[in-house]
Image: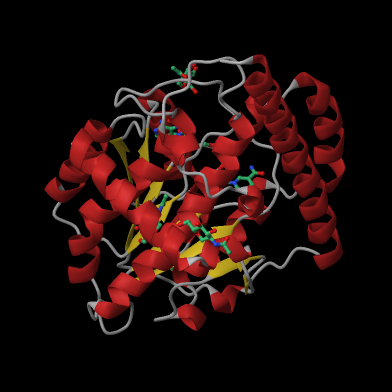
Length: 337
Ligand SMILES: NC(=O)c1ccc[n+]([C@@H]2O[C@H](COP(=O)([O-])OP(=O)(O)OC[C@H]3O[C@@H](n4cnc5c(N)ncnc54)[C@H](OP(=O)(O)O)[C@@H]3O)[C@@H](O)[C@H]2O)c1
Ligand SMILES: *[C@@H]1O[C@H](CO)[C@@H](O)[C@H](O)[C@H]1NC(C)=O
Ligand SMILES: *[C@@H]1O[C@H](CO)[C@@H](O)[C@H](O)[C@H]1NC(C)=O
Ligand SMILES: *[C@@H]1O[C@H](CO)[C@@H](O)[C@H](O)[C@H]1NC(C)=O
Ligand SMILES: *[C@@H]1O[C@H](CO)[C@@H](O)[C@H](O)[C@H]1NC(C)=O
């Protein structure tokens, strides 16, 4: 690699880094000005009989989503990686909600094989699936290749969820009832606005110095989720499917997600978090709202923030980018599965 190329890459890296924290501060201020909206109880009705799968329901926002769903009598399958952690969480939930039905299914989103096994295990229960919440995620991981030879944030946040969704789509479809049509909720992030359109950067292997920007990989994986949400919405509408799909920004919350944030930023973040961030419980509000409110029955193809429909960034509506992403995703899945 020429020194000039290396310099360009270094500037790109710094630029992506700056963008991410600029957007972080902007969103934080916006959230403070907006104030948090917590949907009233009547917006979240008793949902006895519904079955949900929540990826990453053992921690942070996902755990609070599970708790709220259980409190509404939803049967919940937590799909996550750490078995002992899931068992511990389920014991605690059962203590608080003794009649709840909550199960764990092992899922490691770093492996497409594991995604397939998760789907099979779920089908063995012989239950319907009314709600799929694609929540699990990682942020700013150092460059690591997954079992399938892909960058971790791209696969965990986007590709494996895409695969999981496509494997469960028939089940979601056949579980629609007259009162409740099945819903997919994709947890994205307001940070998607700095996602880029260079998909090669996500998919190709990096080995040169400065070739990998963890910030670009995160924001673009979150953009990809929205692009795929809009694209699937169109596809579902075209095929007369009743399943609905929406994306959500939960809010800025201090969770395990921030473990890879650089120390130079972390101290400030911890300070801000204590005073200004949402709590995981607050952040779960939008996700649960989109999953069960009767207001959104049959509503699809949207992006929600603070329980309200929101515009996502202009690039997310770019249809040629949506198509390009879909083609590449399908190629990748064909190659790797
Ligand atoms: N926190 C924020 O400020 C914020 C803002 C916007 C959007 N979001 C989004 O909200 C979602 C939840 O974030 P969070 O803050 O709640 O994160 P978190 O506290 O770090 O929780 C992450 C969850 O994902 C699971 N997970 C991680 N890697 C996995 C893998 N390879 N396979 C299966 N499960 C895996 C973890 O399961 P194990 O317990 O098994 O490890 C854990 O339950 C993410 O999609 C994130 O991008 C968060
Ligand atoms: C959940 O179901 C139980 C009975 O199975 C019922 O007593 C309770 O009111 C329901 N919870 C909610 C939130 O409606
Ligand atoms: C799994 O969770 C347990 C309990 O929360 C924790 O002690 C352990 O370190 C976790 N294992 C891994 C591999 O992260
Ligand atoms: C989001 O939803 C769409 C439509 O269901 C799906 O195709 C896509 O895989 C999901 N994306 C992620 C990353 O969750
Ligand atoms: C839309 O996406 C395509 C890539 O598929 C890109 O070439 C084009 O520049 C994008 N348009 C805008 C307005 O960003």
